[in-house]
Image (tube, rainbow, N blue to C red; front, side, top):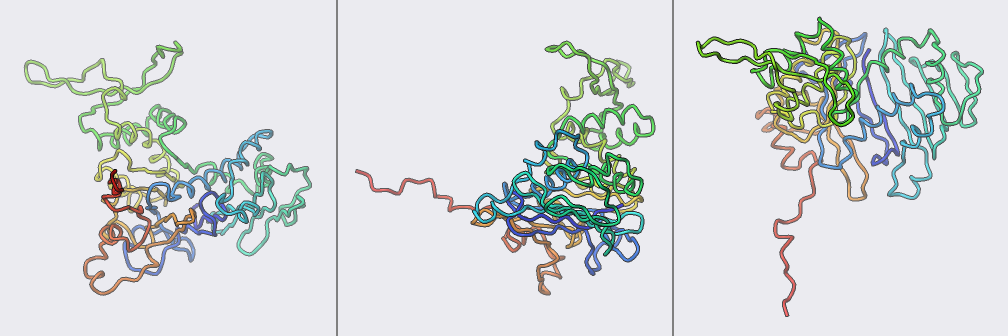
Length: 401
């Protein structure tokens, strides 16, 4: 089960259609980072670069909203659908539909699912298996196709969400793929709770501990203990780290009292613990993990370690990692294929444009220098960098009186 493409149009900063693809191009770089399914070659890892407010997060937001809409409870659709906003800096765009579409591979089948939204109303929805129409819902809510069922459907509720709620057997694998994917924007409490849950499972304890020790090798063990919130007085589970204490005779023994994790560890280590559960879960299940600004607070080598987990032999189930970032220290041809690097640039009109590094031309000198992705990025070859004014912009050059 793997992501193929994500398409957005007239969605927040993406005025024009933009396609983010995990399809591998016919280039020779890093074949170990590709998964083969039938005639498909799909990347296991992709990174998205861009300046602040360029629109990187909106791509992840699109996938998150697709998933949210499929599992929304009846009666709560209005809050969900109003999050799907058009490009507001163009009056024509404000009147037009917004498109969210995703293509994926499951059980030797290719699926393409998408829907259009206009001012809180679903105007069209469709699911294709290959070239076969599973269902197509038009603007008046009428559904056709082999999966069509006569149901009374609200204009702000997805037809596929209704099939999922009805436990229709033919969509079990599709439901599983969507339910297992994780889209993380910031370190959110629900995902921290996944780490807590996994800590209770014996088979994950070693993996979680090994991952955290990449950030802090002095951690000997991690325990989950019940504590009392000093403000609400409610009971809750909390992480404690156990470290080794040197005794007077020079020997070492675990310090049994331990330390509350968030009190003694860095922001990067705390974030890694929050992400550890989803990372291990994705690798175990072979699912999709998307993280906004994954490497914020991370050391470069810690980020590289996480990437290595997904790139090759440690990822036999073909889990996929997609992350956005500002950090160019890992923008390296030794780590990424050109089709695994994407750039989002905010144009003067306020709209975002998405382009893959594989679309750029390189001369012989650039190839001889292993493309030098990071240097060319900083020099503006790929765009997606901030518009910086002259450094003397703040000086008062007006005439004095």
